[in-house]
Image (cartoon, rainbow, N blue to C red):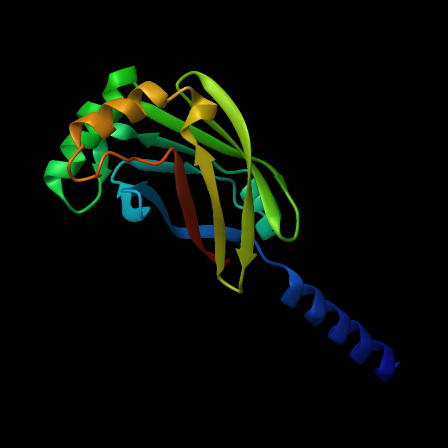
Amino acid sequence: MKKNILFALGLSTSLFAATCNYTVDSSSLQWTAFKTPAKVGVKGTFDNVKLDFKISDSKEALLKSSSINIVTANVNSNNQGRDAKLVNSFFMVQGIRTIKAKVIKVDKTSADIEIAMNNIKKIITMNLITTKNTIKLQGEIDLADFKMLPSLNAITKACYELHQGKTWQDVALEFNITTSCK
């Protein structure tokens, strides 16, 4: 009888230890655009990013429940002059006020993200790296996929000398989520 009680106690303890509801403590989105023939990276973020998610029993389920809404008027590259040019000579050229994204599919090493920009939706596969308390998604978009070449041409023209006549159409994205188990 004593063995059965100890076994039951041990089993219930291990079940409780495995129970976890993941939630998001913080998140960040970083983009890297490229300029000059040498492909010099310029990093930035957006100050107005809203992440929606559901508390979930796994990191995969947490990701699958996630969506993001980005307001493009709040671009932040740590350079106010550059930020104004990005808003006025890139995003507003085609009237891009928001970018939306949601996670469609998750596996061990990648996630498919549906990105909506310029009235076009594309699914982008991003690398997925998880640790105990973090989720990192890394990938890139091609502005041509979103018919953003008029905006690309406008920012190239506005920054012609600084960019040495070259602004690249690929943009690297990195999304970091810090999670906790409640």
